[in-house]
Length: 112
Ligand code: 5GP
Ligand code: ZN
Image 1 (tube, rainbow, N blue to C red):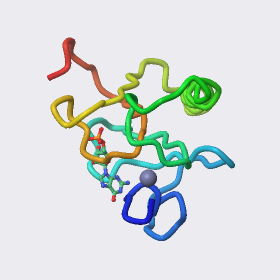
Image 2 (cartoon, helix red, strand yellow):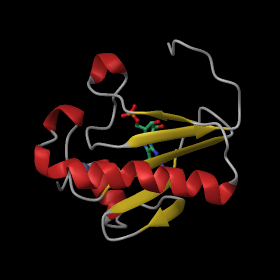
Image 3 (cartoon, rainbow, N blue to C red):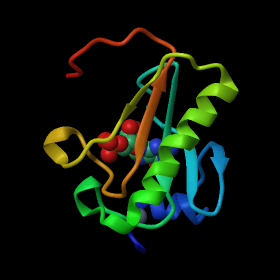
């Protein structure tokens, strides 16, 4: 999508601090980190939000989780939180699907 922030970051039209990249995903550091480490795992293909997923996206979304685990193991992040915000009332501000990975501080439950 031409006016989508995360499509532009995936296309390198807008710079970001890239932690990992392959054909399907780009992983960047959040511009406004909420923990010592706060990264975003972003499928390159535009999908608005969790609600818009289809059965055919199962492989892609499974890969997202496995890559999060790989990055955590590689970097020694033993305890971490993975978050999807689906919709504005749930905190979604960028309507291109992404998974937050936060680590490096104790975290409360339930989240606010
Ligand atoms: P959401 O609120 O949609 O779940 O998460 C969007 C995240 O994107 C937020 O944590 C926000 O700080 C981050 N973000 C917004 N604009 C940019 C940007 O231009 N660059 C990067 N790296 N992160 C951004
Ligand atoms: Zn997009």
